[in-house]
Structures are given as structure tokens and as C-alpha cells.
Image 1: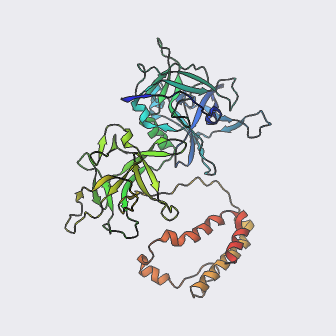
Image 2: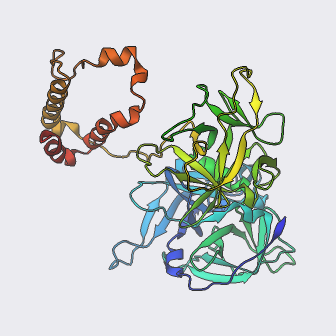
Image 3: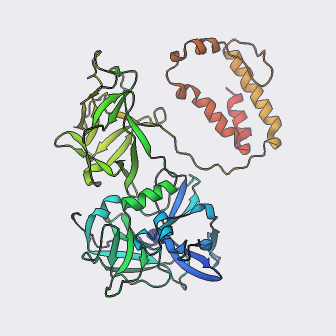
Length: 478
């Protein structure tokens, strides 16, 4: 355990806003309908919104999944008293493998409900801090829950003291009152006057001889499962970049961070260590990450200027990704910011012509954030995969075939005239005069993303038939 954390008391928190992330569940075990609770948890970069709940709301001790799992939300129509019911397909229900194997392992009593994320609204959900699982939390926690009588959107809140002598790394014990229907509720604490964090999923009533209810802590083990279920793309190598106006040439094979045979990081050309990059501390306004390597975690030792491996994540393991001022051009390039005042730096000028291909050298440091540009503080996490949401649109192209054909012809003719190349291949494509130049000298165009961005924007708009008239007007007038 780390040094104790004294949980601040509630002050000026907007409970109505907090409770928007708490949901009521119904499900069936055989012919018997049951009620439970769940809550949205904010998982950045996931193509899903994630509802975390107790595993036994989704999987029964008879080793079968519950059926007709339904999320009940307040009706968007304020004049209607009927809740909005969202029936969840089986493929979007996940339960801990350990709990499915043995339902008596109450620390593994957790699961999720996945809802495809449209990307059109801010994500709902509680924030979290992975470090809390390793700390002795002292003070009061809050449990926001439903029972059979409670209407969706109106959970009740119960508050109680944490029983530190009964809590473990995987289970939190607290004296907040709970009852039937509370299973799956968020157990949360205040960060400060503006933010809260979920610290456990309420799962069980007090054990014999105890006065404390029990919940599965939001530990790295739980979060690893949640990230996998939420389809997070976490496996990355960290590569140095140089985008300054007067760049110092990096080795053409690339410079990467590597842990190999030593408990501290070094640099190598060509390839690097594959880390798991996890969101570890999520608030309403920021996301900080950690690097995991198997069962080890990276800690940034700013005093000794080293990145080292430790047994569990710590505050010094957290970092944020700060994008460049022009993220549209370089959406994948970031600074790695540590403790808000340091940034990770790789000295890419240390390589010598006689260095062996697989040579490992020092050159990684943590420097204060200076006002002057530094060419060696930019990185990419590779492979880079832009965030995308599941495409559930159905486009009836046949209704707009004539407009699409007409617009395609206009674009082709305009492009052909610009490059002084006749449209001799027909009405649906052309061979531009610069094709031979590109094929023979592809390096002459360095930023393909920037060059192709206008065309990609057109393709995006082509997927929306309602935008075709506007698109034609925009491009035909140019």
C-alpha cells in the first residue's frame, strides 16, 4: 500500500449531474425478473460507452448468463413518465473470466455493458484513478444506487466510512447502507469541489461479523479487462519525432524507447519495446496515462533522470499527452508531460556512424518545459490508429446516383484541367500528369496526409446524401 489518502468531504458537488451516469438495470434469471444498478465509466478513445456493473447482474451462479438485460434511462421526453428502455444484445455483455469460472470469487464479481459510441456528444461517465487501488483510502465513500421502487434518473445516495482494516487491494469495505438492487452501483469519492472518482463497484452485503458492505476495487486488473472489452488499442512502441523548423536528422530507421536486460530505459534504432498504454487517471477535464510492461510499470524518476520499472503504478508513473499547436497537420505527434512541469526528451543526436545496428544507448531524460523550442521532445505512439466510431449509417446511394455521377465528372474535369492532362480514360477516372513523377520519386511529397486531406474531406461528405447539394455548390464554384 502507498501512503494513505484522506478523502475530502462533499462540498458544492452537483449530485444531479453525477447521477446522470448511474443507471437502473433489469434482467431475468429464468422467469424471475431482477433489478440492479450500473454506471457509465469514462474510457477515453473507446468506440463504446461502457457501463460497469456487478458480474452477478449479468452471470448467474448456475453458470449461465442472465437474459433480457435492459438499461433503463430517464425518458428524453419530460412529459412522459415511462423510462427509456435499452435492451442489450448478448455480444455487448462481458463478464470477468475468473468470475465465470468460480462465482464465489467476489473480488472478480464485475462485468460491463457496451453501448456503441456515436462520437457526437461528450462521453458520459465517472472518472477514475488507478493509483487509488494501491492506497489506503481514509474517510467516507458514497454509493449511488437503485432499488425496485426507484425511478430511473433518481438514484438514492448512501454515505459511510471506509473500513480500512478490512479493505484489501482488490476489495473495498465501507459502512454505506445498501439493499437489494444496489449491486453494481458506483462507490465514489470526491476529488475536489469539481470532480469525483469511482473507486469500487458495489457487489455484496456485509460479511458475517462485519458491518461493511463490499465492492470490487477499480484496480489495474479490473481496468485491464475493461480496456480489452472496450476495444482499446493499447499496444504501442514509442518513437522519437522531430518536427522543428531546423530539424536535426534522426537515424532513418527511427529512434525508440526500449527496456532490455536492464530495469531502466534506453534508446535503440529500428524497433522498441511494446508497451501497454493505459488511461490511468481520468477526470472531467484531463486524461493521464501509464505504461505497463507485463506485470511491471514504468515510473519516471525525475530526480535521477531515468525511466525505471516498478512493481505497481505510482503517481510518478502518470503522464499526459500534449498535442501540438497544429493537431490537424500532426494529429499523432505529442509531448509526454510528467508532473505537469517536465517533459520526456530523447537526444537523437547521440548516434555515431560506427554504432552497431542493434546498439542501445542512453539519451532519455526529463527536462523542464522551456519556452524555447526543443527538437527532441516529440513522440508518436505506434502504430497510430485514429479514433473511429462504429459506422451504423445506411446510405441509399441509388437515390443520389445522378448527382454523384455529375459531381464526380466535375471533379475529374477540374483536376484534369489543373494538371494539363486530358481526361482520356473515360468519365470515372483519370491519369494525372504527375503520376509518373510520384511513382518514380515518392519522397518528393513528404506530407501525404496534408496533400490528400481535401480529397478525404470530400469522401467523408459523400457518405451523407443530405450534404450532396452543399458539396456540389462548394466545389463547383471553385
